[in-house]
Amino acid sequence: MEENIVQRTLRQIFGFDSFRPNQEEIVKAILSGRDVFAVMPTGGGKSLCYQFPAVILEGVCVVVSPLLSLMKDQVDSASELGIRAATLNSTTTRSGFGQTVGAMENGKLDLLYVSPERFNTPGFLERLAAVKIAFFAIDEAHCISEWGHQFRPDYLALKQIVDVFPNVPIAAFTATATPQVAQDIQKQLRLRNPFSVRASFDRPNLSYQVVYKEDLNSQLVTFLKSVPGQSGIIYRGTRKKVEETADLLSKQGFDVRHYHAGMSDSERDWVHDAFSQDRVQIIVATIAFGMGIDKSNVRFVVHADLPKNLEGYYQETGRAGRDGSPSQCLLLFGYQDIILLKSFIDKYEDPKIRDITWRQLLEMIRFAEADQCRRKALLHYFGEEYSSDNCGNCDFCNNEIHRVDATIDSQKALSAMQRTGNRFGIGHLVDVLVGAKTAKIKQFQHDALPTYGVGSDRSKPYWRFLINALVYRGAAAMKPDCDYPVPQVTPYGWAILRGTEQVEIIQFPSLKKQSKTKVVNEDPCTDATHSDHFLFEQLRQRRKEIARERRVPPYVIFTDKTLLDMANRKPITEEDMQKIAGMSERKMEKYGAPFLELITEYVMATVDEPEFYPDLHEE
Image 1 (cartoon, rainbow, N blue to C red):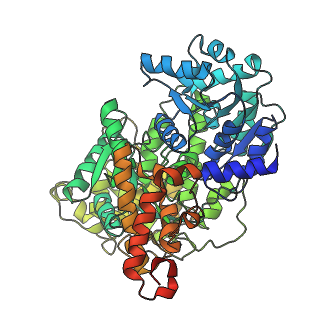
Image 2: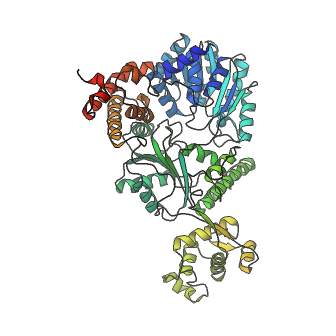
Image 3: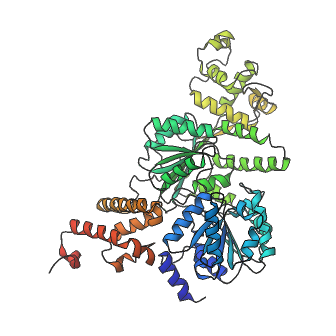
């Protein structure tokens, strides 16, 4: 493949003068007919890696993806670039299926997005065998591995590709793969001497912060008030929690909607489209939301419940800052979440699945409790060593968290358990420790105990946090066959009481304090002047109007990054506009004029001295 063809296609179709890291090597490997295995972070530009060769190569590229929302967004984006794309999944109507298959058979498709369920239907491979296939692109390839965090049985059907299409390249992509999962993916897909790329998992524009979950509703309100006007996602563990949190925040005046798998297809589609099109600011959701979201201006992701594993956490936080602008990732961590998740894991009948899931949860806990750089700990999990001991963009590196000795307080809490007979719940134990005057304490005469009130110098949330930490660490265990959680002292707990064992805990920062991490500016146009911000907002409004007319998400027209480049450089000629990042020839032809007109009007109204823009003024 000639170099000038590659560069011309990159500029004319995609609007870029150069590839991002690893993209060019992957594209050229596919063009040469090689299998590819690429581990690239969310937002790393993997879609271009298969869209680019699909434009050049003869035949259709079949993209297998489990993400229905991604398919729609990708088809919209590809169509705006002039790439012929279509989807086949569970939402495809019978007439739509016939039209798409007809276009494929007549050589009128460059990209065909297929769900694994559709791929696995009887006769589908035979249909594909009847047409010219350029190559297969397997997105979210970790779904084929039982060791991955999102194993999907339908992905196992992809093993057949090599048998039916022995001479067709396969390109597998994943954003979350430990070395073990990566090896398993290549084995399951039977990749043949693949060109392998493992890009850096580092997302330097994301800040990471972990805060102990003590008063969740108040903490969420506090955080959202610190990021006014910004677009974000709040993840919760269950459908009930999703609805409760969305209702609470809505009553507090926030522009919020909820999303989970229990909603109808039409309800989920409406929420997805409204968020993508900037008609809704905040989504509260289970992990069913966000898979494949290509929205570039998500400024924060909050995990209000502990994720089950680091792969999921990394992928979900990766929804933020896809345009490269500073964005926040907040994890509200509580030991009570661990105890709940552990109870779910214990119910798995398959011991192998139980063991894998528990080990994954332990890694997630280690990250939350890490007494080192968050970024360093996260990258280490994926087999990458961060070169610095201080990233400057997480709570640990900004000295917001500390490890402290909690042995004496642990002895107080364990003593309260023991002296109350190991038969009362955490709430009552906390009341005993702080010296509360409740009817229950009077009833059992616990105000006469030596431990009554010994923890009055600490808050109730602190003692709840510590008791849950002691349960997680094995110093206390929940009493079996009890209607509510009742902690009781274990042999390890007795060692702490006797002073032969010590306890250290993480002292997490409070959201009430101003975080020292790099905060998200209310103005996304962070590198521009105040006047440029005004232009940037005008450009965003123009984009929103065009997107509404075309019924596509605004970022499909132009990303915020492209609009920011316009606001900073203020192109006033077509030649200048074509130099803007992300401005392909097709987009220039379709959208250049209305944006040029707006910028020119802005410049005419704000520039006083003719010599700055002599071509705008009469002689």
